[in-house]
Image (cartoon, rainbow, N blue to C red; front, side, top):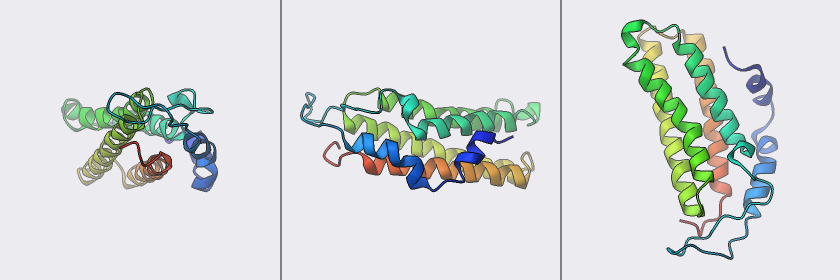
Length: 165
């Protein structure tokens, strides 16, 4: 169920995976500011949200959540299934939307929304396991995947300049 590519990536230390993202994000030139005084993002290596490891891992998680919820009962289609899928899709969506914003502060705000959605997914996965809709093995795999997304997301948030509230 879990992407083979993600299994391979999760074997590497997080600092190796974050290397390019941290380097490119910390090299942001904040000489321009928007109307509110927030620094404007000027990225060198990160040209698109697709370049962000956090977005890639969040996409893999959302895809795997969709696949795991296919076996949920039809009675849950508009309940836990929909809620879990919606929260999972919200993670990469917020990362993408935030990266497309003009200021660092806005980017951080959307990364915060992504982190909140990630915690929703973790909670809902545990509920699905408690209700025996998800096997303990699948739940453990998805929770580990979720933890990895959280670590990368936190690293990305930490790498952004502090003065961009």
